[in-house]
Image (tube, rainbow, N blue to C red; front, side, top):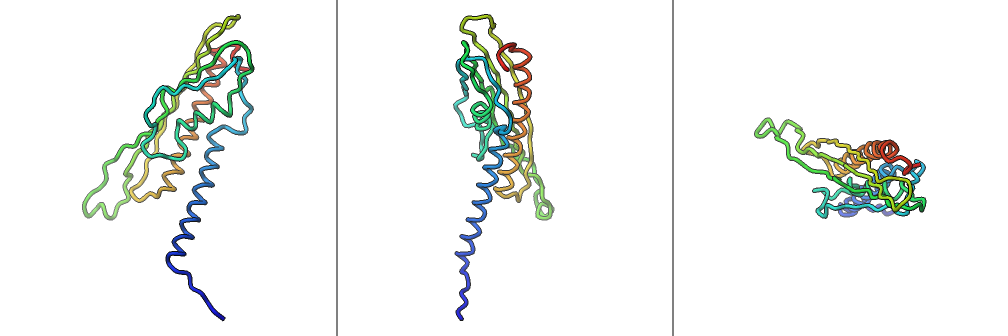
Amino acid sequence: MKIEIARPAQIALAGFLLGLGFLLLTSVKAVCQVSGNGHAPLIISAEQIILEEPNPQPYTEEGFTITPASAVRDWVKTRLRADGAPGLVRIIVLDASMKRQELKITRGLRGWFSDDQKYRYDGRIRLRAVYEPSGGPKPASQAEAEATGFFTMPEDATLNQLEKKAGDLVADLMQRTALELENNMLRYMPGVVR
């Protein structure tokens, strides 16, 4: 009987593949949570819904799998449906950012024995919905919504922990912004949402 012992390189590869699989699974789960799947689409009384992202620079410093901007794109794609009536609705991204700020940590000998929060990530989503009629009884109208939040990460945080925290924050921001925008559209854009 021959017993084969795994080499360190094989163990490392197996660990990497397991970690990658876990990251992919959590990313897929977070995308489903962010997009608002499970909710019926909002029917918009318009011929077309256009998403405008006037800010061409990157929205995040980290390159997360799920960003505020990608959550907005997914929400517009999965939640809003035009019914073909005359008119146009523009969803304008005023801000969809995640910014990192370095925090002050304990230095010296005491720093070796402490686990300080090293980074703070501030997220913000701010949207405006504008209805532009093409004749008919409905006047031009608009509504806005915004949500902000943050989280901190310790010095020894892993990439998976950071990705999960960022995904949770983006999901929360998108959920709060979407709820406020939908309510404001019903209130300030009469006859456009049903």
